[in-house]
Image 1 (cartoon, rainbow, N blue to C red):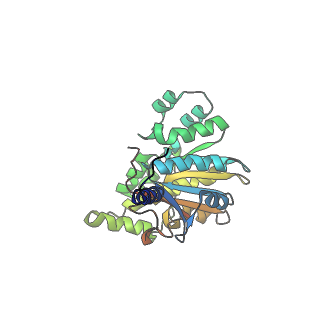
Image 2 (cartoon, helix red, strand yellow):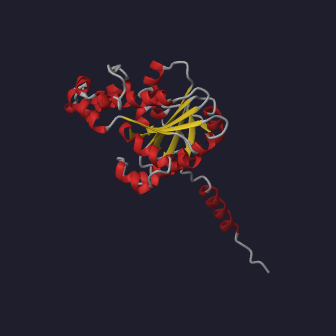
Image 3 (tube, rainbow, N blue to C red):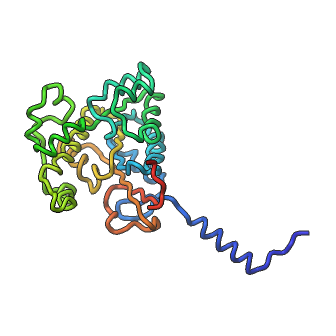
Length: 285
């Protein structure tokens, strides 16, 4: 015979289970701050030619959804992948790995891989390898961005022809009044250096350049980058629109909040879709 559960205990258990079901690690919002499903986000992104997925580099939800979205987008149109995490002068090494000419160990020894490559980006590269997709190294070699942070854009004129092939064509368009670049000056405070946001801009311009260089009409380009490079429709997207205003663009940003149930005011409008992750989420490094 089943033992009867006291009513108070039953009500307490029911309340506990109801609360437990409300625990969510992340929620997806649209640019207006309205909660949306993954399926609705996907349906919209399928209409775009180029998609910028803004991540937090150590956020596991970002990386998991990058893989899921990549898999979902690999359907009706040819898919091209690209990433900030690979610098343009490492394209040959990346191509050799994708073609099976070198092993993962060989890639690690010939390309400058990020410290979280194995956990966070290798699955995306291997996705491309298994399905014979292009994977483009879009970022400027870091030493040249460092040069710009110290000497401005003019220092790039001293590069060789080969070195210039790894960056956006000179001269570089630059709007210092873009809020993202102005905010960088504010964040630096007394250490503000007018060349610091230029180093960010040369990265944005170079990534946009290589995205467009490898984009093919009728296909879709999915690019992975730090959220700051495309937040508020600036950065990479600003440069893309200067060169190819007629293409259709979609943007995603990642934010972290103590409460994921409602998007904080400062995060509304950062992108077409905002992945809001619990601030207590464990990082990948």
